[in-house]
Structures are given as structure tokens and as C-alpha cells.
Length: 126
Image (cartoon, rainbow, N blue to C red; front, side):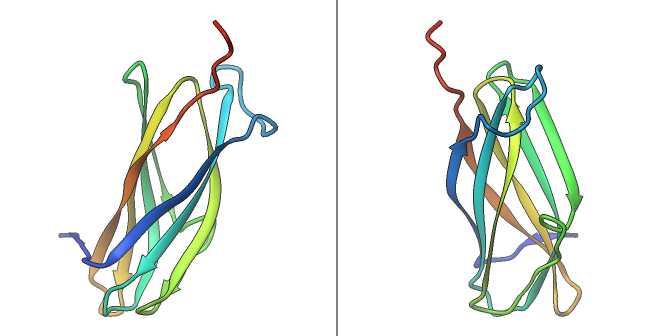
């Protein structure tokens, strides 16, 4: 059983529409998001994976799961944080949320929720 670890907290620091990034024609809107994982608990944790759920304005959902965070498995002692940025492409306005999966130094599986945040496509005047 995996439990939410109190005081392992995620903040969405910034979300930026980034039209210069590559995006497929069916999902033409790229967004860069900046995330920080804060370990305010009394346990050392290692981030092992992530699960993103992105729901668009047509109620279509994409689930993205993977190991690590941007190719890393950061270990955070109490009081430490890890910041990174990545990007996601959408077809329309969307909301992203999810969780980071981690192990404590005692090999107890825990998670931290990613708060929901909006990916708002630019108004093209139509």
C-alpha cells in the first residue's frame, strides 16, 4: 500500500506557453512547466517515478507514467527540494495533475500530489 507522505509537497512554480517548441499538428500547443518537490518531512525520500493526468476541454484524458523525474532519481533529505522543468503538448485548454512516487530511506512507498494547473491555449481570434 502506498500512502501520501505528509510534508512532501509539490509546487507548480510557473507555466509558460512555448510556441517555439516542437509539437505535432494534432496537439499544436506546447507548454513548459516548472515544478519544485519540497521535502518538509522528517524522512529522506528518493523520487522513483511520476504519473501525470492531463484532461482537455473535450474531457479527453491522457495519462503519462514513467520512472524518475527528467531522467533523474533525486534523493531529498529533510529540508531539501528539487526543481526542474519539462513540457507537454495539448490540442486545447487542459488541466494537468498527478503525483510523484517515492521511497523513504526505510523503503516505504509514498507519494506527493501534483496540484492541478491549467494549460490555457492562446486565443487565436476565432
